[in-house]
Length: 337
Image 1 (cartoon, rainbow, N blue to C red):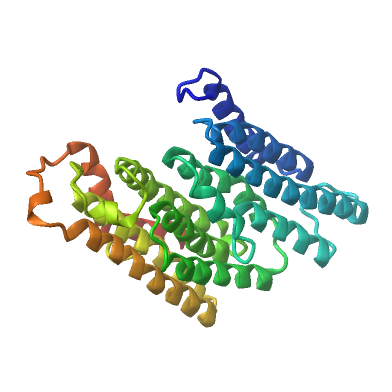
Image 2 (tube, rainbow, N blue to C red; image 1 turned 90 degrees about the vertical axis):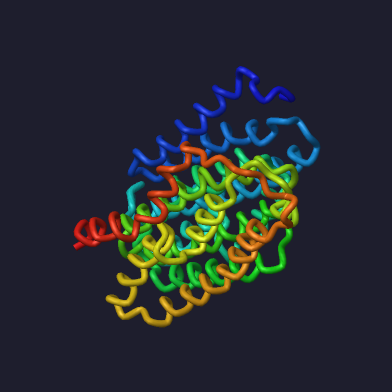
């Protein structure tokens, strides 16, 4: 598997995508579980794409964690079936729904069950890291939307994820770890709305992917994963990366701010003031390390500057990022109301 373009990689990617679609298109807990397992079987070989020892260790850890959460999920589903004689979302027992919820939070890597995620992600290539932080979250998030009981526990987990993700990223020098902790923090925002209005979580998730694709593609062009690398000479246009980083932090009037604002408005309308405040504090903490990354990109010695030609490839992304609050946000408000 040393070759990046190994023919079977296409097969593994197809299995991974089919597994997720299998879970998304089902309303039956058993088939959703089968989809998750199929997705896992497709993703594990992709983690070993370069055949390194560290990747093998990371994929083993990932397999153990995912198997453990899947075991809890299927056992809870069987117990739920014995209570309600239904494989569909009919939670008559609070304990079972809590177990199912916690198993899915473990799959997602949400706090306080997030400690496995950073130790795995720092050993990955950027493309696999992107899949781990975006595509792999899609099916468990959809399944969490079906768990409509235990709102208090869900909101507690969302608060913990946002604050823990922000605090843990403060001391990091590895860019991949910063992106991982940032993903945990963003997951908290998605979980805060998943039981209340799952379409808003989907909007947030979509915006997160739109920002992450170009950002991770550009960061992967740097040789090395440490923060000081950002201040070195590079042909990439740094202003585009800075706008994407600040958008991820939720700085107005960028795209990331728009998705956060929609969730904040909904939470304040529901009188969930403490939750809104804690999510807001978590984002303010995370803005510190996003600004730190931006400064590393901006403050370079005079000798390191290129006379950069502006690439037209990223023009639409930059436009969407900057104008989203003025164009997309009013449309979203109309759509929600």
